[in-house]
Amino acid sequence: MTIKVLYTAHATASGGRNGRTQSDDGVVNVELSIPKEMGGAGKAGTATPEHLFAAGYAACFGSACEFMSRQLKLIPKGIEVKTAVGIGQSSDGGFGLVVDMDVKISGLSQTEAEQLVAAGHQICPYSNAIKGNVDVNITVTAG
Image (cartoon, rainbow, N blue to C red; front, side):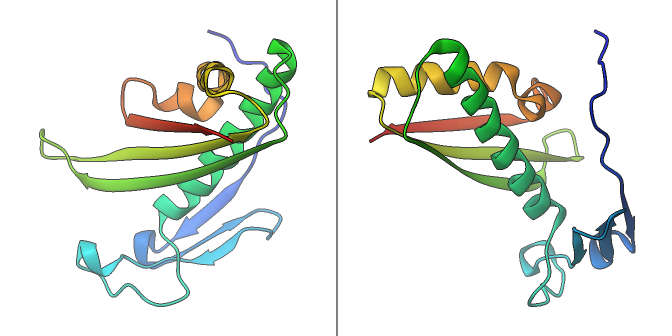
């Protein structure tokens, strides 16, 4: 597969999970800390790489669904994507991620909403990047 790059984002991290990450334009600029659940300090006002991935995946997935809504002529009144990214130890001794996604589609039937979300999942760059490597559980609610 060949990718025709349309845009490239740049960011730098220092200090790992107890450091800071920032985009080259400074729009993203967050302090990181390891959460208490993982044995860290869990400092208030800090983020984790999982927060950043969850936010990016939710936004990208929503846009993929918006794009597919026009292709399928299933135009919803609204699309809201809530994404939870969990990290834990995998059975092979490394670490892995699990994604739980709750997608609310207003203005379509449940069947149409499920069709739209399935189509969005097929074209979303984040979904494609992690396919076969990360369990993604999607719940679709029409309203």
